Length: 221
Image 1 (cartoon, rainbow, N blue to C red):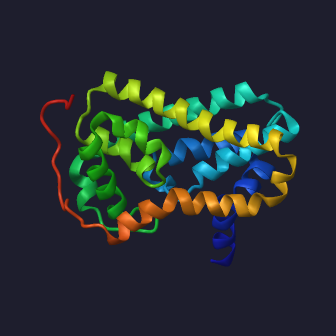
Image 2 (cartoon, one colour; image 1 turned 180 degrees about the vertical axis):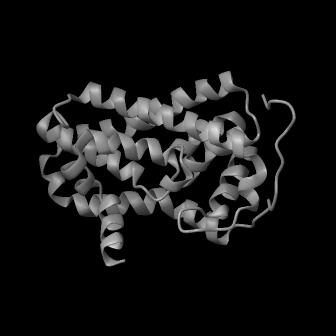
């Protein structure tokens, strides 16, 4: 049990991920966090920011330059959302009746559903910047059978915007303030608080309006 917990702690440590898995582990984690409900606990925002910081120092990750890293991570995010959409479309409302487990929390799905109802198709873009919600938003889009072409447009825009903002922010800040990397732990803590604080508040203290749902017979535009 202790070894399993140590592994989980390492997998949510952005610096450990880059040091031990490089670009390939980064791609797997981005794919999982943006489309597989088991990936909601991964540190997507801070991981991408730390990747940018690493690029500002070495100009590469696993031998790949900045623009290739941005392109590959964006593609991983796009494919992750497609996987989530497919999973949601196939599983439908069964997820809403599923009991909570270590890797599945229904409250995250409910929050993402409420977010989708409020913002419509734009939720696919906005959700990229919100932990937990970005994992479940494409699943919800699949559950409500969102028009696939519309979903694809928002999916691509959202992934590219999220990856570019996070990686390039870390990259340019790292180049502008070289000593910033020495305070990486503090930066990660601030990022986690800023990005997850409002979402966690909504999940634990917001009203749960949805207890069940159904898959429409026709695609949602």
